[in-house]
Length: 256
Image (cartoon, rainbow, N blue to C red; front, side):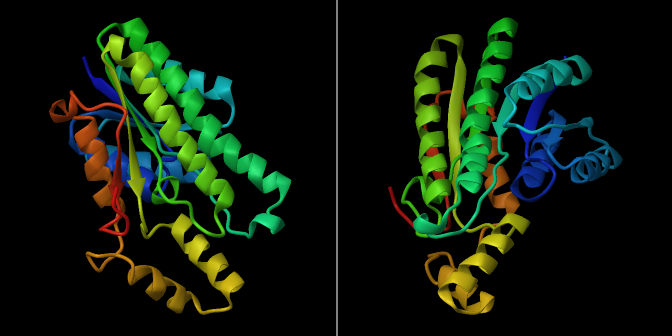
């Protein structure tokens, strides 16, 4: 039977990289994203390359939509093996200037979206009865909070909490739950972060990016493929005894 990997936020950036890597690893891919155009493009790229994939358009902040995603993807593509809670949003602002609307939306997507995905995946894994892998998108900002990213940091600390709690509850069902903590990854999301941060600091985008690069021991930003390799490992037989962990993928910016 075909093994299925569901990747949320797979329409661009890190999620797109994860979708391509897991397809290469032999999984059928459910390309899930709020942006139907980008999701369809990634699906087209995958199918043209000879992989099995289908796109699904949803907002992960809506719990029922997440459960429907799992149900429909399993029906379309095969038994669920991996669920990647990758979808996320960010905004940059000082705490005193952060709007209620922006904060609530961010927490709904990053924190509750991960919770709903964990619930839906766990329910399906329990039904199938042979274990599974849940992999969550945390962040360097969930290890050490970032200035101008208070709500984002809160959400990613929360993702690490969900990861640990779920791993303890689901271990009896042979379901592992782990997280990846990216540092600076050049994606459209990161472009927006750099632009807004530079505006607030009153510096150029080029200077903002140079300042961040100076913090990376390995001397370069991460690529989506760098992060995808860690997700691939979490989904592999080699990581069968790993659960409740979060791994920094930051080129040596912070050390745990």
